[in-house]
Length: 194
Image (tube, rainbow, N blue to C red; front, side, top):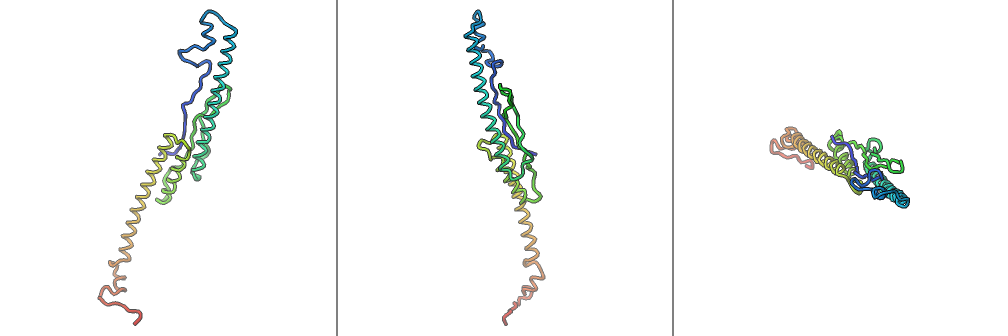
């Protein structure tokens, strides 16, 4: 059974060690051309710091977006969230961990009655679609909740039809007690004002 709402990202950052598979960093280019130049080494260090700062800024932005996304699920869950969010972290060039993905577990089990199931399904769907940018997993959970609600509504209609038939059987013309009281058996009518 589907019971979680999540978001994730494949965001990664380039460090001076992993940058440019097949490309050579500017300091390495200077070395490859026949020697080490102090100005090139200084530029390489500045380039590396700029890349690190850019990567840190991207990771901070992603961290904020992921945390807001998961908090939106919790806020809209109506108490169906099971605990807090779980995060997937990536260590930035500054040594800090940044959230790049997350998950909130939601109780998506059917209720005890069709009406309770309908209510839960609506809450699950609202929680799944609460973030401004629902992930494919979020949309899948919402679709599952919609299906659960439709099944509960069908069950409610079936129960209603069965109750209506039972009510007609007990209270309708086929009930001999009602027919006798209403005079339907002998064609006579009862006038209470006579």
